[in-house]
Length: 88
Picture 1 (cartoon, rainbow, N blue to C red):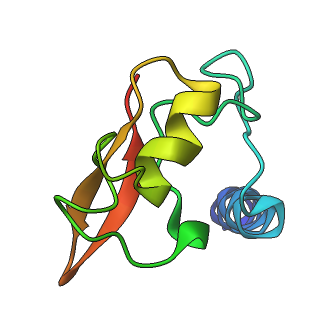
Picture 2 (spheres, rainbow, N blue to C red; picture 1 turned 180 degrees about the vertical axis):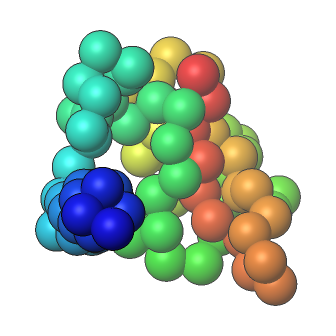
């Protein structure tokens, strides 16, 4: 009985830590959290494919991503909308 309670407590604590940490990277060796590459950027707002991800149009997604990543970015489908995603 005590063992079950301890396991439940440890799992609960792990879940709470994950929620509290939020956007922070729990495993920093996986990737650099400050890098914009290989990540979605919903803070840029809605991304219009063919407009916001083209260098010719000086699109906001492409422009944002090309500053930190050489390859730029594209409008990635995310549910029923598109979000800016910077290439790796």
